[in-house]
Each structure stands twice: as C-alpha cells, then as structure tokens.
Amino acid sequence: MSRATLQKRPDEVQAMFDDVAPRYDIVNDILSLGQDRRWRKVVVDAVGAEPGQRVLDLAAGTGTSSEPYADAGVHVVACDFSLGMLEVGKRRRPDIDFVAGDATNLPFADETFDAVTISFGLRNVSDPQLALREMARVTKPGGTLVLCEFSHPVFAPFRTVYTEYLMKALPTIARKVSSNPESYVYLAESIRDWPAQDRLASWVEQAGWKDCRYRNLSGGIVAVHRAVKPGTAVADPERAARASDFLRRRASRRSY
Image (cartoon, rainbow, N blue to C red; front, side):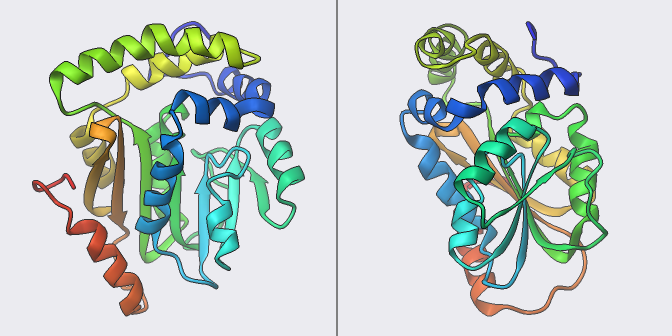
C-alpha cells in the first residue's frame, strides 16, 4: 500500500498488519518513545470499567490494550480483523477472548457491551463513520465510547516539526527495527491525513453518540475522545466520579 487515504482496501490493510504482527508492540514502543504506555493508561481510566462489566476492545491487535481490563476482572473481548495479530495475542494471553471481526460489521448482538474502546485503529477502517455507528449498536444505553487516535498537534510550529518526523524520520527508524518498514510509510500518511480533533468529535456525534469531549495528550499528537450512548444506564457513583474527573480537564467546549 503506497498511499493512505480515507478510502482504504481492507484486504491490503489486513495483510499489512498480519505481516508486522510479531514485532508490532516492540516497534510501537520505540517509535513513540514509550509514550504509548501512558496514552493507553489514559484510555483505561476514561473507560472506567468495573469488574464484571463487558468491554469491547476494537482494533485490539495483540491484546496489549486489552490486558489492563482482564487484569482488573473486567470481561474484555479483544476484536481485530488481523488474524496474525490475534494469533500473537492468544499465545501470550490465552485467558483473553480474541475474536476476529470487521469494525464496520461487528459480530455481536445489539446492546452487548457496557463500553467500547478503540485505540489507534479507527483511521485504518475503510468506513470510520459506519464503524462508529456499529459501536453504538453493540453498546448498552448509557454506555461509553472511548476513542484514542493520533491527531493534530495544537501548537503550529510543533505541528510542522511533527509532520516532518512522520514523513521522514519514522519510516527511516522503522527500516531498522521492523520486518515491513514500508507499512510504516502507510501509517505515517494515514496519521497525517486523519481529521483533526473537532471534526472527529462531530463524526462521533453524527454516528449517534452524545456529549463527545476530547482530551489532548502529548500536545495533541494523540487525542482521546469520550462519548456516551443515549439512554439510561444503571447508576454507578464511583464510575461516574472517574468519568467526571476525565471531563473536568476541559479547556474549551470540546477539549480537555
């Protein structure tokens, strides 16, 4: 795949992730300078799932993002369309439910999960807005969506430097540490072409979610969006308090 656009071929993207699966987590740790661990912790805190609840972790890959939920007694389903990624994850964490699935046509019944989360995966979906509607379909009323994705740095001079890193330095580093460095050219382009924070928040609300807010991390390199499915959920004071803590970090109507 030589060019990343919002019109992606699922078979090509799937093959790319199958190929990089064995070293995917290691390469990500190197390329993010270890920041991906902090980003994922923010996501887990924003979801705020309790033991016994059901969480769908989409684009879960090898299950790195699913492990904190499983370790906390949350019933997490790690779903991804890359069989290569799922096979690596299942060997490492046989206790987690790994399910092959397409985000635009999820293999789950309506209102199955208390929360749905997807990290660094929505931009690889062929129809992101359809995927957001599917996530709403499988979430219980009052349930939560937490979306973590690369975004646009808010400080313009830094945004220029960051774009240069994406398009030049990232593929160069990937050639030294990845089995498929060309895939990281695609990833760099997909990050550069992805919608900014406010536009993504609009996509989320147009897909049927409400009260979408986001929090910028690392100067806007990454943004975590959080929204709620309309309806009434069973009251949980502790979970509500954690969600409020996430939402209190608001700098404007949408950003945190």
